[in-house]
Structure formats: C-alpha cells, structure tokens
Length: 117
Image (cartoon, rainbow, N blue to C red; front, side):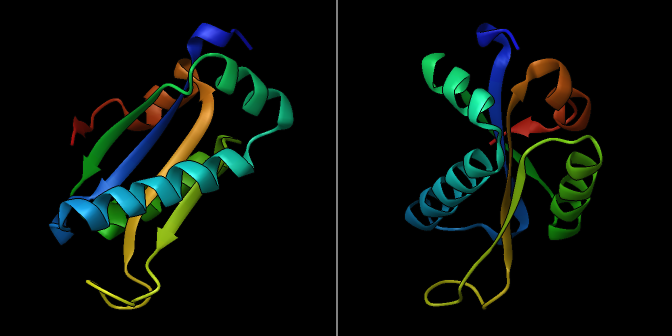
C-alpha cells in the first residue's frame, strides 16, 4: 500500500446545517472512528504520510448510510457517526461518515462525485 496514495474521507450530512463547532466535533469523531477500523499497517502508513484527509458533503442521512454500506462491501474501514443528542440535534441523528485510511483508488469510486464541504 503506497504511502503517498493513502487518504481518509469524511462525508458530512449537509441537510443538518450544523454550527461550525458541532460540525468540527462530528468530523473529528468520524476521523478517529474510521482510523480505528483500519488495519495496523494502514494506520501506520497513513500516520507516516501526514494523515491526509478530505471533507466532503452529501445531501442526506440516507446518502451517508449508502456510503457506509458501499464502503463496507468494498472492504474499507468505515464509521457512521450518529449523534448522542446532548446539544444541537436529536439522539441518533446521522451526522457524518468516515472512510479510510485507504488508497485513493479504493475510495474515489465511492466519493468522487461528492463536493467539498
């Protein structure tokens, strides 16, 4: 797995319009949770590469759930984040999904059509 090709993608539920602080926390949850799903080799290589990541947006929670399912089917590390409901949104609200670290060639077929946040 070439180090320079590894990346992580976080996809945010754009329909929620989360405040900046809440959004940052949810993206952090997704980044850490997906990282923990990766193999030790992928984690080490990604850390050595400087932890490259991209944050994208999807229109709905259903789109994030589809990304999760497609990522799992592709064998990628993935984590769907559902909020605890303590602040801005209700408990169980799907806020974002983290995919990778994995190679760009593995992730891009799933996320290549999405726009940057």
